[in-house]
Amino acid sequence: MKLCWLDMRGSTESASALREEAVHQRLDGIVAAEAADLDDLPPTMTRILFPEGGPMPDDVGRADIVVVDPAVHGEPRVLAERHPDVEFARFVDVHDSETLEAACEAARTERWSVLRFRDPTKIPLEIVIAAAARAEGGIVTEVADVEEAEIVFGVLEHGSDGVLMAPSAVGDPTALRAASATQSSKLDLVELEVTATAHVGMGERACVDTCTYFGKDEGILVGSHSKGMVLCVSETHPLPYMPTRPFRVNAGAIHSYTLSANERTRYLSELKAGSTVLAVDIEGRARPVVVGRVKIESRPLISVDAVAPDGTAVNLILQDDWHVRVLGPAGAVLNSTELQPGDRVLGHLPTEDRHVGYPIDEFCLET
Image (cartoon, rainbow, N blue to C red; front, side, top):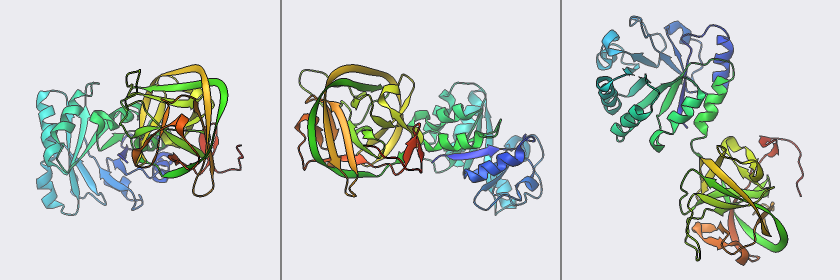
């Protein structure tokens, strides 16, 4: 999970509510201009002092990290000798080639680098991330809002180690934490045993085309019920009569659920260009990918019933065609029309019921 630092230096209205929300959402740090503003924070939260535009205080109070501009406050290494119990971060305002090189050097050598990029392009951040690829320090990038934070978290697939964001309204800390958590996650996959298959006639199925290439052991989770899903493989594996389409998953009937960011379910029928779904591999590693197109067409369908080790019944309705496939243990690619009772496929069992796609702890019976 990426670092989330909430910049409270300019907050007056709703400041108390924002701080409480940040603590409740387990944000990583609060940034303040005055050391006294950090005193009442719980020990679970990093206290960050950032006296930008002002002098370096002699007493940094209970600050864990102090962000300094070397041109104003002095070199972090020198300051660290005076305050051995505090970590120092170098602040760099990137607006030209000279300051970009300073940011690269900071990212390579400093424990913490806090970067502000004047221009909207993310190319300078890409250059800094590449320059610091083998460095052990952390890069925290200033962002204007949650939308920019989501972009910064994904730059060069690695992203900035964290972001520094000033909230504009109550709710922003919650949205920021959610954005940091959607970049990568781990799901528990289980082996499901196929119990029956049946040809069920014609219906509409959805092919989900994404803006990302899938790996050979990746796909998306799809199921008729929210309590159980099967890992449907992408079209990365060769087939006779047609080229591979490694951005596509022939996912299932239009009523089916799939998982998107923040463990929310989506019907395949409601996905559209710009939607997000989770790409999941056979180890359960999940990453959000953007949908570029959904193709819904009338096709013959096959129903696959399976059971989990705990007895949970799982159903998946797919296009009834040999080239539509699911993933089994160790990444085995299984043609749906050849599945037989006793075969094993990979799946996921969400633990909560759903209300408009969101997980909720309530009674819900799906059959």
